[in-house]
Each structure stands twice: as structure tokens, then as C-alpha cells.
Length: 346
Image (cartoon, rainbow, N blue to C red; front, side, top):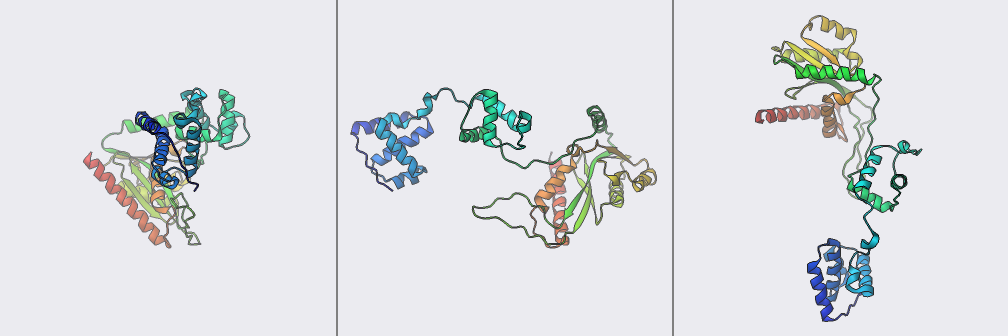
């Protein structure tokens, strides 16, 4: 590194020390400290290490100090006028990022910083640099994420609302001797789901795929009151898997006069086999409440399955289905124990 030699009078050095003591701006204090350290005979490398700034920043600070003296240590952008990233600008940017480019007349389906800059020029008349847009996105806590695929409900909004309201009313007026559950099935694949993970620079972790995929299926019911999960396992996702769950619920809640299941419209829930069981030996014991089509967000057991994938199946390294299912059972059992302890403590 090119050595820097600064020669100033003692009185100038004293002024710098007084200016450092009065300064409340962290960035300006760094510039004061850089010059003072250099005046005390420290090298550029030492200043770079101590203040944790790049050596090019040190040289730039020195150049401005030599040109303008102490005034050169202050941010020259203070004369640029009001900050463009004010509350109104950030509020509009927040609404833009929540939408998609076609909503604002663009043909591209995803946002880039450059496209956001042009969109905000249209809306506010203010043009900012792409780097400033990065700062604006950080201020509104925007992030680049993976969108979730979904299917819109084909029902009219009024019909969907009526169905959901009936379910919420049933839960609100649920008698003490009755129980309610959110029910759903989940697939367990031996070939692991691939998800995000932390890696160091230059590394890309590998997830070994066993090759020929195997599947197991769980049918689960989440107790609305206790949040305990009841589940059964099967090799196939058929009506009999659903009936196994109904039988287990009936045995585990023998004193309940009725069990209410909130569930989706998957075909095994309304098959002839299921209807026969509900009209036969399970008559009067179990009542089904179907959600509107394609509305998984209203089935709270979906969150349990998401946590199961995040903690067990995503990026897993089990070579055999037996080992994977052992991990699944361990996680769900541990979850039930923790849920039970929390409710007792509450």
C-alpha cells in the first residue's frame, strides 16, 4: 500500500479531536478517526484493520481532507436536499413490491431493481440509483423468496364465506362433550425434498437421492382444543387409510358424543366406502365439515405438515424408508409432548 504522510499544525490536530468529541454521526466519526490515526503515525493497513474499512476508503478520506480540511470529513450529500426515501416513497414501494409487474403495465412477470426504479419514476417522478433501490428494499424489509403455488377457489366469494362461517360458528359453539379436528393427509417420500440451507462461500451442499422413490402416507387429525396430533400410517392413500384414522379417533375419544372433522374435498373423504362407514358403525359419532375447494390456508393441520417437512424430510439423508419413518414418528411424538407440556404449564 502507498504510505500516507500528513503534516498539519498542532492546532489543527486539536481541532480534529474536538470535532470528533462533538460528532454524533457514526460515518463521520470513522473519517475523523482515520485522519487522527494517520496523524499519529499509524499505517493505512493498521487503520484499515482497526476501523474495519477498506484501504480505498482510507485513501478517499485523505484526498478529501487534503482538499477541504476538516470540512471534507463531512458527508457532501447533505446539500442534496430532502432524502428521496421518505415515508411516502417507501409506502408506495411497499405496495408495488406486494403486486406484480403486469399490475403496472409491464410484460415481465417478476421484479428486478431496475424495473422497480422505472415503476417508481412513473408513480412519484423521482429517479433513484439501483443501489439506492437496494437500500429502499432493505428499509421496507423486502426479500427475494420463492412464491407459493396455489389454485383459486372456483366458488363465488359469497358461497365460500357462508361455508367458512358455518365452520367457525360450529367451533365457537362446540359443546364440552364434543371434539373437533382439522384433518388432512401428507406424503412421505424417500427421495428427499430439496430446500434452502446455509452454506459457506464456494460450497454447494449435496443431498443424496436413494434412486427409486418409495412413499408412505400419513392421515392426521389436529385437535382444535389441545393441538395434539392423532395420526395413522399407510402404504397407500386410500379410503381405508381415512377409515383407520376415524377408527383411531373413535377409540381415543370414547367419551365424546360427537367428533367433528374439518377437511378438504379429496376423493377418499367422500368415497362410497367412507360414506358407508359414516352411515354404518360410525353413524352419529363422526360428522364431516368440508372446506371450500382449494382453500388449504384454512386447514390448520397444513402448518404441522410444513413443520414436519422442514424438520425431517427436507434434505434428509435417510437411505431407507424405515429410517425415515422412524424420524417422522420421533418428531411427531416429540411435538405432541411439547404441546402437552405447554398446555399444562398454561
